[in-house]
Every structure is written in structure tokens, then in C-alpha cells.
Length: 308
Image 1 (cartoon, one colour):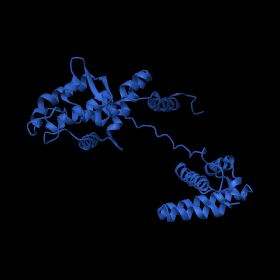
Image 2 (cartoon, rainbow, N blue to C red):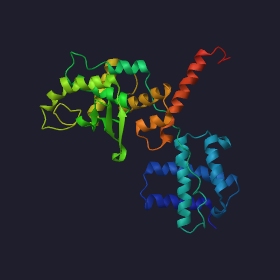
Image 3 (cartoon, one colour):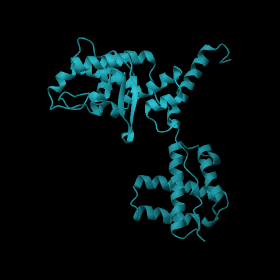
Image 4 (cartoon, rainbow, N blue to C red):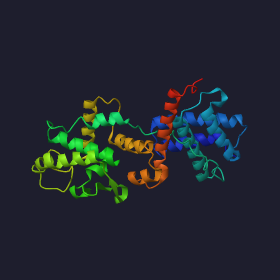
């Protein structure tokens, strides 16, 4: 017979002495497992071998609902507590205290899905037109072309800075992108983005290329080498500041906006999947929630009986 409290003491000693667990983590585990011991005691469990999967599952429910007079835990805290309990039972099995790991199939709560942020069309237009005018320097012309391409194609920032000059087909109005795992895809590109790219290739890229040693890269930095992702981020932040766009803006913001605006315009989900280069349509489906939320907001504001 192994009392649950004894198993917890041995497990915590194991984490401290043999695993070298950080003190802050150990303190959190100690609190989580103390709460677990209270849960088992309330269920009348005195032997660790008598714990069932249901006991562990009920503990997870208690964490999230605040049973027993305690405040419910946030997802991250509940996840940590379940990880501590799973570790305890896995250790008990390895040490021969129990014959089965009853916590193996009890999984931590999934974190809340964060919906991607998308800019509205007017904000995107304002962002894209802050650079690249006739009076701008070569960096401004380049940045305008880069931002236009990101929004027009939905490219990841790594895909955009990885482009070579020959990857843009002006005749077919398309761009060849190299996605994750080297998988290539051909995506169409709009006329405004093509015009911005042409302006860059005529007015700015030759001057930048003259400073380097020769590279096929489409987007170049001030030294004539391939533009880095970090520099591309900086260009977007500068454009956002110029345009007065509040909040955190990243290259992925333009990718999210690309997908959301396509779906808002009636594009098929499978088409958007292909354009984004997602291996599974389930990854793309998150954008459908964005558009549904937008519809709810419009309904709530516009329908006369929406809030009665």
C-alpha cells in the first residue's frame, strides 16, 4: 500500500534531487499536488493503487469549475496542475508503486484558440500607400513593393524575402513561393502589387544591387544582399507608424488580412487553403471563425431586434 501523500513526497524529492527541477516549478507542483491530495482525500482514496482514471478526470473538472469552494483556474494553471498529476502517476508506475498509469489518458485542457488579427480593407490601403511615392528613397520604394506583395499573395515573410527575381512572372501575373518543407506553390498577384514591384525593379533595385556582389534575390538590403526577415519586420513597423495604425502589426497580420478578406468576398475555403499553402484545410478553417464573428458584430449593430 502506498499512501498518496507518501507518493507525492517521493515524487517531489525525485524532481528536486534527480531531475534538478527549478525551485519555482517545484513550488508550483507542490501546490498543485497538494490540491490533488485534497481531492483524493475528499473521494475517500487512501491508497494510490485505488485511484482511477475517473478520479483524475474529476480533478481536472474541479480545477476548471472551482469545485470545493476554490476559484476556478485559468487554462494555463489547470494545464500545469494536470501535468504535475500525470508526472506523479507516471513516476509511480515506473517505481512499482502502482500497476497501471491511470492518468495517461487524461489530457490537459486545450488552450483557447486565438483568432488571427485582421485589418480592415481601409486600414490596409492606408498602410500600403505610406511608402513608395515619387519622392521616396530606394528603401521606401522597396518597402512599398514588399508590403503590396505580402498582402496580395498572403505570403509568409520567409517566403517573401526568399523570392528571387525570376520567381515573379509578370506575364502570368503570378509568384512562385517556396513554403514550409520546400513545397512550392504558384499564387496570383494583383495589379497594384505588380505595379509596385515594377517600380521597385526599375527605380530602386538597381541602386541597391550595385552595392552588393550580385544576387538573384528580389528584395535587397542597403548592402545589396538579400533582405532579412528582421529588416522586413522593421519596414512594416515603420509603415504602420507612418499610417497611424495602432496595435501590434506583424507580417502575419497582412497574411491574416489576405485570407479573411478573401473569405469575406466569397472565396472558397479550399482555394484559400491552396493560396496560403496550408497542408490541411483545418488550419485554414480558423479564418472562417473570424468572418462569423464579423457577421455577428454587424448583426448586433444593424438589426433592429438583435439586442432586444
